[in-house]
Structure formats: structure tokens, C-alpha cells
Image (cartoon, rainbow, N blue to C red; front, top):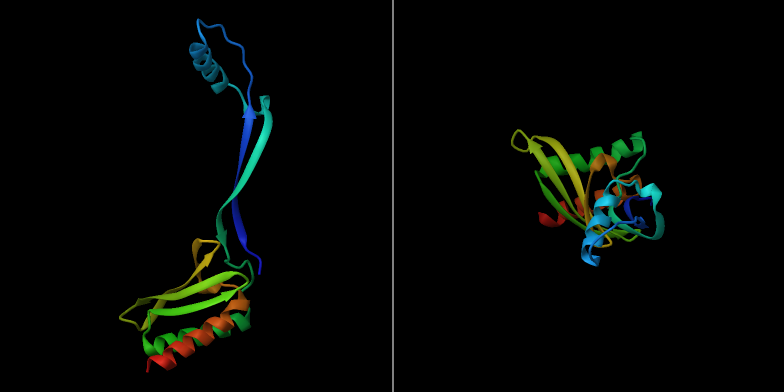
Length: 152
């Protein structure tokens, strides 16, 4: 399953300037002042350090009739029983799907939103059910049905 990664790349850029000063401390202060006006493009990149800041599983895929059918089945099970939280507790492609959370309108008669919570590499995320990858929805339906059945 493809995931969307947000990555920060930190660059160490060396900017060189010449200053006239009474001592080293003053020279350092003046150099910082001078380089504040310089473009980083004038410097030399001496190192870079990429780090992932967020991972998103939300699918960039069309809402197919098969996907709509699975979502409809999940919604039907949730509405009949009025559940607003279902523990999912399954892993797919190194992603731990922790729970399904439902926001209702009109005293649990109409569903406003369904979010799927997940954890990837210790990053916590949330995805609306419509944007959850198709390959995960079958397992979500199975977990919802099982939870409802075992709760009776």
C-alpha cells in the first residue's frame, strides 16, 4: 500500500563573509548580521539530513462502486446498532489500524463522519473512511461486524 510521506530536509549551508572587528566575539556577531542579508544560494551545502514528519495512508483513489458498497455495509451495521466507536486492532503493511470513530447527527440516526485511526512508525494518523485504501475496508467491515456480533 502506498503512503504519502511529509519529509523535512534540513540543509547545512556555509555562508562566508568578511568583517572588521575588535575581537572574535564581535566578529561572530557581525558575521551573523552580514549573512542574514545573504541568500542561501550564495552558500555551500555541506550536509543534509532528511526526516519524516508525517505519514498519511489516505488513498488517492477513486470512489468506486465496490468501495461505496463496502462503506454502505459498514454504515448499515453501525447505524443499526448506534455504535460510535469500534476497536479495529489489525495490522496491514506495517500499519496498525486502531479504531473506527463515528460522528452522528440527530441522535444517532444520521452519520456525519467516520474516521479510521492508525499508527505508522509511532506516528498517529486519522483518515476518513472514504479515503481509506480499498484493500483495508474489507478487514474494517469484518472487524465492525465481529465487534457488533460479540457485543450482543
